Structure formats: structure tokens, C-alpha cells
Image (cartoon, rainbow, N blue to C red):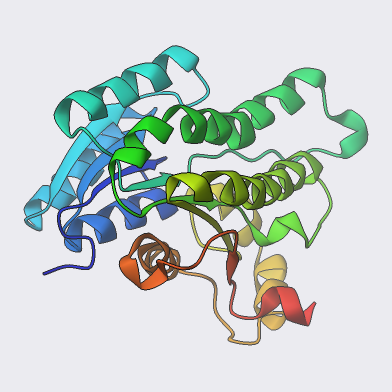
Length: 251
């Protein structure tokens, strides 16, 4: 018996990186996973990997910043599963731009994907979450919600807002037996961080600032998400779990 046996989970941004690792880990632990991503090829690859391992996964091509896509996504889950035990809002984008040059369109795009999409999914999925007993929402924030570097002002703003939203939702959703927590990963070697980590000097500098002397693995984050989604965290809500090897407390 896995830790998520007979549970239904939706993971956004499941086509690669942290989302793929979370989707596969939830599948290994017995959940029926609905894997969402706007890249159809990548989310099918995630699904194929889960099925090869003996898991149950349904690929859903969707853009979480599109209201109609979100409505269709939730309609599919309602028809096929009738409930939702865990929602992982992982889909996100980043931008590198000096704050003085950030355009209105850039600002709106990152807000739409990183923040508004998580709000909309969490709000509109409440009916499905209430059907399940002790359901859970997990928002993937970042240590950048409190540790800041140049050219990531828009990204940091969305991640800080997502952390605040998680705490506020935890208070409101407790009335419906829905827990809401968030994870703050440090630097993980994913497509999103390639541009930064391929610079040897930057790479070594970040490692030097990390007490545990390695980058976050996608599996590190997946295990944290598994804990928060499982019954082991049944009395934990409104909390942020930092997974960064000590980086944010050593800077």
C-alpha cells in the first residue's frame, strides 16, 4: 500500500522538472494522477513513464492561465474521478529582466501563470476537494519569496504572493477540511535554471552558499510534496516547507 493509495491528485506543470518528479512520485505511491501541462509531448512522456512503472496517470494538455482550459481540466476530473484529494499548483515561468525595464505585458504574464492560475484552480477545485476527506492543496513557491537577486523582481513577487495566498487560504479552507501548504525549493537543476547554472562561477558561488553543498533535486521536492499530501501531514496547514539545503538561512 502506497501513502496515497486510492487518492486522486492533479499536478500542474507535470511535463518536466519538479512537476514531473511530483507526478511520478504520487503515482508510485498509489495515487491516480491527472498530469497537466501546456506541452502535450512532455506530459505524455511523463504519463508513459508512470505507466511503465505500473502507475495510473491521465495526461491533460492545458494552459493554466486560460480560464476555459482550467474549466475543461476540472470537468474532466469530475467526470472521471468525482473527487480531488491533492492539488499541486506547480506550473510556473520565470523572467530575467532589470526591474526598470519590465514591461506591463511581462508583468501580467508572470502574474497570470505563477499566481492567478494557482488562485483560480484552488478556488474552482473546491467542490472536488470537499468531496474527498482531508484533501490538500500544495503550492510550489520558492526561496525567492524572501531571498532576492537581481533581475528576478517579477518572479520573486509572484512567489511571495503565492506564499501569502497559501496562508490565507489555509484559514478559509479549514472550514471545508482542506489543508493548504506551500513548498519553497532552492536552486534545482531544471530547465528553468539552466541559464543561471551553466555559468561556472555562478554555479560554484551558489554551492558555496549552500551548507549541504549540492543543489536541490527534483526528487527532494517530490518527497516534500508527498509528505504534505499524505495523512502524515493531516494536522499541518498554512505552513511553508523550505527545501534548499540550508541556503536561505546561510546567506
